[in-house]
Image (tube, rainbow over the protein chains, first blue to last red):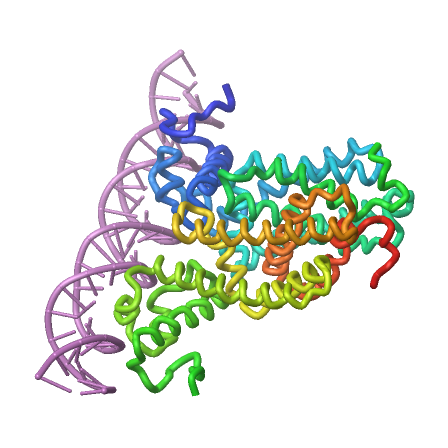
Length: 215
Length: 215
DNA sequence: GGCTAGATAGTGACTGGTTACTACCTTAGT
DNA sequence: ACTAAGGTAGTAACCAGTCACTATCTAGCC
């Protein structure tokens, strides 16, 4: 009996500060998935939790701080998922593939993430939030480039591959598919497109000798 | 003397309706590049043109109609640029490459385009605007898939390539690089990242036999 | 086990600011 | 003088953030 909350009209108010903070984050992501990041008002958040708008500002000093907390929450979850997926890989390329599909699954399970990634907050001069995302992206890219370099050392990737460029392409592939399927929502699904395009990416990585050796 | 207008305080007002419509489109794109799509107000547009806010609504019935006109303007220019670039290709893969870099150049020359592509208007239920972009994207993808199929027929692309998936990757690569460099603006440039990642993409397309044959 | 006092989550009303859009009037150009 | 572009002055809706007050919970005490 420690974690049951209905989306609307939970009959009991007065949560502890930590619980309320977490619910604000949860509800904010939920609303952002439906109506878009910039259209989520503090009034919407309060209404979704069954409290008044003023109560929101007891737990966060500003709306910007809410989005920062949301982004940190997303980062922690995503990194956990990616690390776990990579650890199960038998070799660097296998780890890469597992990370890719784990990432795709994670995004598909949190429809707000595409919206946040494209929100004006990130592309304007939002200081803290944008800096956080930059760190995530650069760290992620370095990790992918490292995996590709390992694959090259083991002869699993072609020697003349530009590992850095391939890592940029890897991340670009994810972000591009996210953007595409967000606009083409209803006609395409992220998971399906990802499953079709990843093998094409792999062909750019694998050495010519093992091209015909799927397993 | 048909196309000189200063960004602010053009001393002469009272343009013809068509000219004013075009200037609204121009100024809107200019402002969107600087401050983001959703933060461009009709007041901003008016101020940038040296007229009052009410004057804007004499030429467009609503703000949404302005964005629709902007998107149509962008589509017309982009399609013209792409068609011209493709026509100069000596073979399908060459045409693909020329289209790619022409597209990148076009986006780099119009910094508002990334913002528009990620704007809430496109990812919410914006009916007309979103439908327009969907048409552009699907048409573009079909064109790329056709080029790849031609390349396969001429032995320039590997026979087992999934042309449709590769076309999705092609577009995703553009959109992903746009998203990345928009967030990493200042640290990366779109043109440089594009130049580094496109060869990686090409390696996924080219048949093993010609892998070592750059030209 | 009941009582009280301090702590704190939540309320309600308000503010200053911004926004798309409108109706009526004025003025420039032919 | 007639037409169309622009000016003026609104309006109603919405939003983030504030503040004084109230209701509820909890710890310590007898």
